Image 1 (cartoon, rainbow, N blue to C red):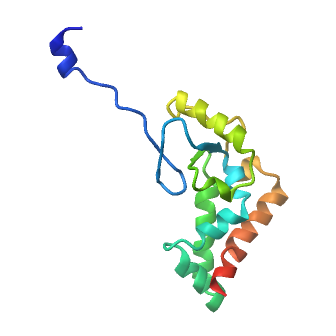
Image 2: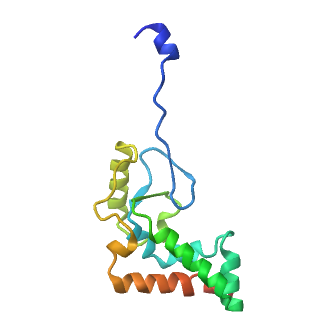
Length: 153
């Protein structure tokens, strides 16, 4: 290549990633790759989501006032997360919310990085498609009706 084309040629932008939960940057080669079912199946995840600053007012209204609108908003939050059909890249600071094989999830994340995010786990899909019906209903019930109760009491 000539000097001029090296100087002015378009350079490929480096692939970067952020945690699908916190939006914090994930360093290349790091993180964990999880499915929506693994995300939705964690009570610690739901306790965290339902007590974030953006959702805490709904949680307080849901528990203290039995506010139907707040409960409906919590249901919509559950739907937002449970309907993701792609694999999730999770940062080191959030993986403790999930009871998963971290070594395996890290290995999948490396493959995800090697493919610049164009890689999904075979078991990816929405939670309703990939979870047992009973497990899905139990987690939805927990997320909408119970998550965050201890932090409001």
